Image (cartoon, rainbow, N blue to C red; front, side, top):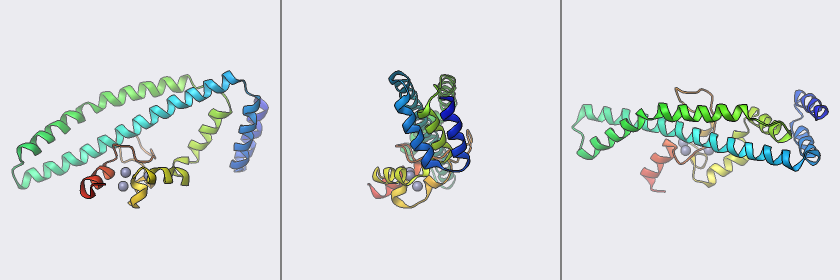
Length: 188
Ligand SMILES: [Zn+2]
Ligand SMILES: [Zn+2]
Ligand SMILES: [Zn+2]
């Protein structure tokens, strides 16, 4: 496989991304079923982990914003019992994020160390680099699921505004704050 890797690297360097992808598909024909299965399983785990992390970060951002708004309200008027209870619940939830994030980091670290070698893995790596996240296909999927790409608010084009990690791009999970607010206002 070393030969293929060299050709791929040369193609990538010249920005022949489509051609490199085709070459990787061809390589799969030479790879053993077991090797392909291992790569597929790893990618599946990785995908689950990344989706989980993204949803968690979106949730944390949303809750923090809601807490800030609620605290601001509490300065101009007394909060209702319901609002108070909700605020306490949010604050409790926020305290749990350090531990949750640590667990995700651990899983991610372990996955990184078990990363198999092969064309599927290299393809995934290349797509990550090209910010495949922002591809039309993913945009359509997000819009079809009623995410921000449907509303044109532009959230998915910007990286997550998280203090934990910078430059993370992704589409809406069920925890997206912008989507949650939109559901609250418009009931869709
Ligand atoms: Zn949005
Ligand atoms: Zn959203
Ligand atoms: Zn989106």
